[in-house]
Length: 412
Image 1 (cartoon, rainbow, N blue to C red):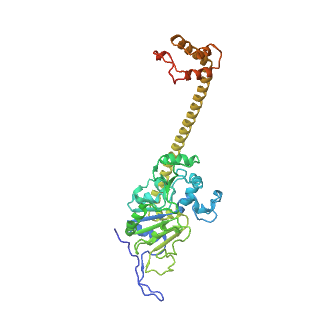
Image 2: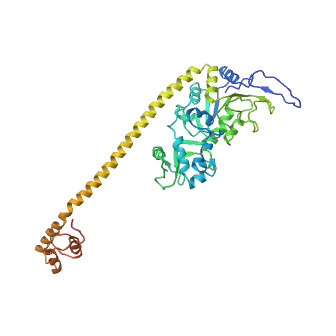
Image 3: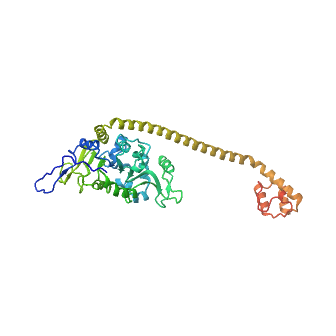
């Protein structure tokens, strides 16, 4: 692993300051980060991302005032916005989550230009790992190798029962969500939930295990589209080596108020100056970085090819769902038709019941000694049902069982 190149390293002193300070980047701009990449000093890049990378895809972020997802949840009549992702609330009332899940369900949105930076870095063997807070699975849809992805808050990729922890078929869960229904476990009938980490649940083991190793190796940290307000994800920026340069691409500065967090304005006077920031939307910042690294054309081509592939996949899914709906409707119609035919057949057979009963009685009378009361009934116009009941109640012994009804049989 190549160590980050120290640019313009110099000892500087501020008033009341005695420690030597080291400048890792030429300055706090995206241009200085691109220079680091181009000269080969960044070979183990970690990308951390939040909801801001998906807003260009049409997915709302969580906390933007007036437009964020939490501000849009009043229609669900929640006690507080975060309740939609609270495991205790979900157990009592899963309906709001599943109504929201229908809107967030993967397949409704496509990866943005920013998302394709990940497979591009992987292709160039520069991506150590991508850590994302997002549950939308757009990183996966770029074709990024799952081994390079850590979904810190889980995703819709799998689903399981919250009672018995049985993994559930994802197509089964998806169909329920699309129909506006709540899926239940086929084994224990418990509530099924996508493996999204709710408030009150532990983060995936994969997150903790890999983070302990990856961030020690990191030689460039790129943080995209996150307010860095959710723990423990936000504290990952403090776990890279002290000499590791860090770049934030976001609409506003973030992560400055934690120990060893970002220090864009040299507020904390850390011994190492290593932070850069690009203020703007993520697609704009990533496009600028790609251009500075001479990757813009390659990244654009990946984005366009990905969109064509996604369009074909969406069309195929739409056709599949339409075919399934058509087959389901056909089954319903055939079942209804069969039931109707059965009812009609039953109505047609009723006139023959009396005749069949008379034949049975005649055969029985010829071969056996029939009790007087039964013989009288057979020659009268008694109700057919009464005759049948009485026939069943009468014990008739016979050596010719094939020609007479058994004791407990009811004639048809």
